[in-house]
Image 1 (tube, each protein chain N blue to C red):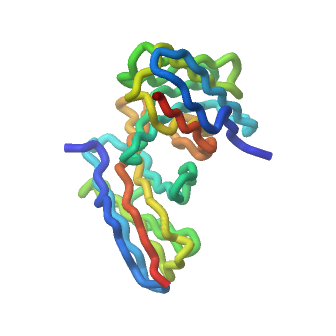
Image 2: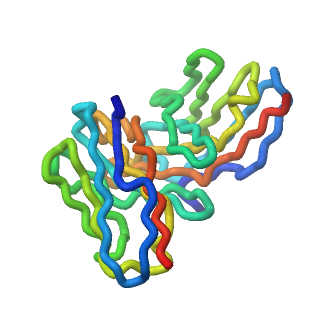
Length: 112
Length: 113
């Protein structure tokens, strides 16, 4: 089992819809969870992080964490074409010197 | 002001050569990282330094040697380059190891011929 798994996509949604990106992780000791956005040919940008079970909202973005199910998701409301990018899920594993493991990313396309 | 800068942006070289990539951050962060992103876009940590001290050293060939002269700089030297080293290398920084890399550099695209 991969340490961090994401559906590679591509995920296609119409403009204005909600995009839902999912991620599962294997290490139950993982503490911190992150979502990065990476445009083609650019470096990753940190969008959100979440530490506690539940939802965390920031503008059009909502991160959801369920540690019992080892599941973290990112919802993008009112999706815009400018949201088209690859979204990377990452987790920090304290048992391994706090190293961060990334998923392979989900490619999102928002169609006008 | 660029938060995390890397040089060079592109590096094309022959197999067997030795090359270096430099990284500097002006954020005052304590932790710096090197990541490798391969052709399938998978991002993998190589090294992590906290205040010039090596924290994480993943299973990376010993041809790769990081050097941190001070906490604002983390350079990567690669000896005897191989075809499989071709990738994009990202430097990143964070306030501390628990926060994860908050800022990535622009990347260095290394092509080994």
